[in-house]
Amino acid sequence: MESKIMVFFPILLIALSVVGFSYAYWTETLTIYGQVLTGELDVQFSAQATNDPDGEKDPKECGTWTYDGQQFTWSGDRYDFDVANITCELVDEDDNPSEGGSTNDGNEKITINVENGYPSYYGSVAFTIDNIGSIPAKILSIKLVEVSKDSTTKSVNVDLTACQWVQVDVDDDEKNDFELHLSNLAVGQTIDVGGWLLGDLCIHILDGAEENTSYDFTIEIVVGQFNAP
Image (tube, rainbow, N blue to C red; front, side, top):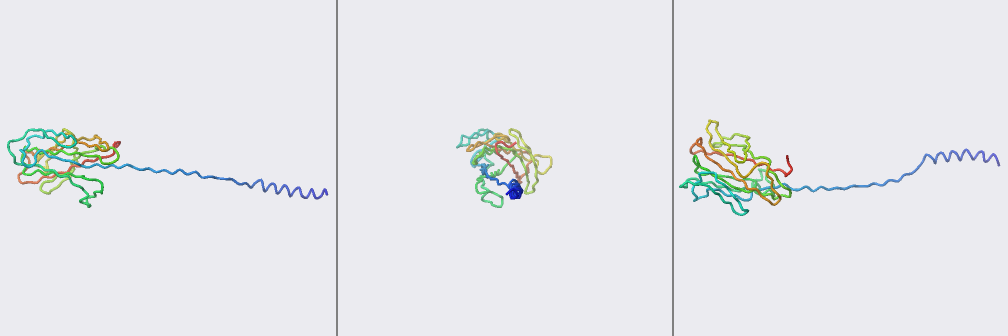
């Protein structure tokens, strides 16, 4: 009887040792799911007017513009004759898919035409920039980026600052052909969602301009979200 106990005891120790190094554990996984929905930055030109439509006497200064949300009003002196005129048109880039317009951007371009211009003619255009997106917008830059004379084009990089004239010598003959002036639109201005900004551009033809000549220019207005640097 005693010998059986002595044999069994070592076997029991071995069995316990094996059990001591084997164990089970439980796990549980927690998951976090998130979604970020971004807003939309979207501005457009929505209204425009000129200070010299057909039938109006020619303006002899840039004058001043006001806008009450429905109607533009220009105040300034005029000549006693009607020789030139200035027109303005809103352009939807969607009409020109090759230019990269999206389906929701609206009127991204304004085209301005001065007909039968002459030195000391002051054609002025007023317009509104509307925020049709879902976040406030901010004017980041306003630059003259391209000028041309009779289809000969050159690139430039000139900031347009409110209430300062920018003179342009297109053909580099040391004679300024025309000058541009902004008064109601400036870098740093913000547009609330559903709001608008009044902008204007005055074109003054100078003595350097040649007869029977076509002068063109391109201005780019860059708009970003309200908190852009």
